[in-house]
Every structure is written in C-alpha cells, then in structure tokens.
Length: 282
Image (cartoon, rainbow, N blue to C red):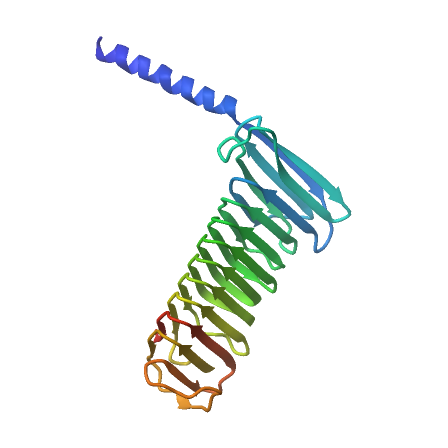
C-alpha cells in the first residue's frame, strides 16, 4: 500500500470517528428572561458546569448530552430558573454526562451541584452555592456576595474575591485561597491542606481550620491582624514580629502563638489538631 493510499484511509477513519462522536452527542440551548437578582440552579449528576456573566437580563444554558440515557429538564417560575439532568434507566457516569455552559446576569444568584464536576464560576457579584463530591471547584473574580462551597475530596481554588463572605467545607480536598478578603472567610477541612495567600483585608473574620492537614498562610509585612495559631500535635511557625497577646490557652513554644500586627484590623485564627501551621511573610 502506497503512502497516498494510507493517508486517504487515515483521513476516512478520522472523518468516521468525528461523525460518530457528533452522532453520539446532542446540543440543547435554553433561553430565559429574568429580572434583577435572579436565581439560577443547575443540578448535574455527571459532568462540568461553567458559569460566566453576560449582557442583559437573560439566562442562556447550553447543554451537551452524551447519550440518550439522560435528559435535561427545565423550569422557569418568576425570576427562578432551574435546569437539571434527569438520568434514565441504565445511565452510567459516562452515558449520563452532560456538559453545561451557563451565561447569567452578573447579579444572578447561582446554585450548582455536580458529583464529578468540574464547577467553575467567574466575574459575578452575587451569592453562590457550589456542591460536589469529587468535583474540582474554581471560583474567581467575584465580589459582594456569599460564596458557599462544599466538597468531599475535590480540590477548591478561590481567586480574587473582594468584599465577600466565604464559607468552604471539605472532607479531604485541598483548599487554596488567593487574594481573598471579606467580612467573613471561613475554611474547614478534615484532612486537606489549606493555603491562603493575601492580605487578610481590613476588617474581616478569618478562620482556617483543619484536623490533620497543614495550613500555610502568606501575608505581606503590612498586614493588620490579630492572630491566634495553634496545633495540638503539629508544629507551628511564624515569620512575623508579633506584639504578644493573652489567649484562653497556655502558650507553648512550637505549638502555639498569638499576637497582633499593625492596628489588628482583622481577626485571624489558624487551627489544626495534628497538621503543621506556618504564618509566612511574603
């Protein structure tokens, strides 16, 4: 067989595979007209959900279905939009997968749930709830809202949050916070690592707690905080010259420290049972 014949056969195979893949997927697009502070809920058994802002007061949901073992149901009552994947008999994580791309007004409140994810939200100034088992969660460039995230073992990354209220709960997934500040920032993980890189804002309540995971908090020299750090069985390290402060527990070198920097505008608690804690200067 000559080279030209092999190339022709290869091209035919590629075209057949592309056609087969196209035949196996179905694209569905839904449009909803909403008002101010609309509520949008997407529930997906298997597959990613991505949300970003768009112009006007419209919600556009694009769903890619990978088989006939799953359907997409919808409802629109007032300014509440609900879309969810409906699994049929015999559906599996592969055949029940749906990919969602969602465009909402920037002030729309969103609720997302996917077992496998990933879940992605960007550039909203509203409240949001993201839940998943092993889903990778990524939230970035949001403001003026309550961000609630719950996972079992999926990693969580939150980037560039201003004037927010952040609550994150994870059983074993790692949590990374980058340039996150607000009135309340609480993270609780059982065994996952917690990484914070920011300035702790100017009047917030920050609590990073884990049972056996490590905590690393990076802050600039000008940070204004009142900090308490304690690990019952792990080691605690501090890079800052803190002004000493009394605490409810007896200080123990290498396991606890407490003090203030600057005007102590924000409260910071770093707590672990057996993990290592490091308050690091940027």
